[in-house]
Amino acid sequence: MAWADPVDWAQLLDGTACPMCADAHLVTNQSSQLITELRQSYARLVHNQYRRGYTVVILKRHANELFELSDAELAGYWRDVADTAAAVQHVFGAVKINYAVLGNLCPHVHCHLVPLYVADNPPPLLDMGDGEVLLDSDRFAQIVADLRRELGRHAELSDGPVVP
Ligand SMILES: [Zn+2]
Image (cartoon, rainbow, N blue to C red):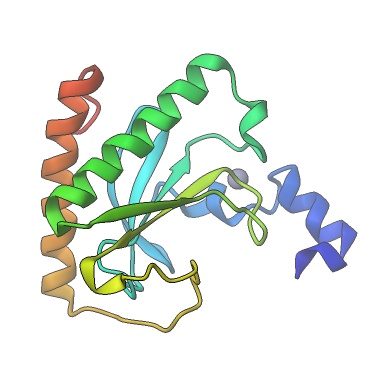
């Protein structure tokens, strides 16, 4: 845990060694693939699909806590999260979306969207280390395309086009 090393943690906090600043905008990085760029964030499909539709919405700029954002940034960011959740719900038919804003390993504002399904009754405690499911590349690319299309629809309905 980076907290144990105050120098490492300070560099994560101030962004000088922030992995999300380095790769949140890339088409593909070690953990996920870009679905699309939104108003205040990047929506990304996580490679580990241990929960079908597991996505993450990463704030474009470096900030550690939600209270560091202006009112407009905060509203735009949560609009992005909501639009992404709507797309995930539509594409996958999730019963419920769980939203997790943690940042314990990387303190750059991001929200995990973890979909739950009928078979998840009773709902499990959120465990993002609960195994690994990697899809074949064609299936993964199809999901990214489906979510991008849905996000275009939702973003247009809510507040103007931001999806290319
Ligand atoms: Zn960062």
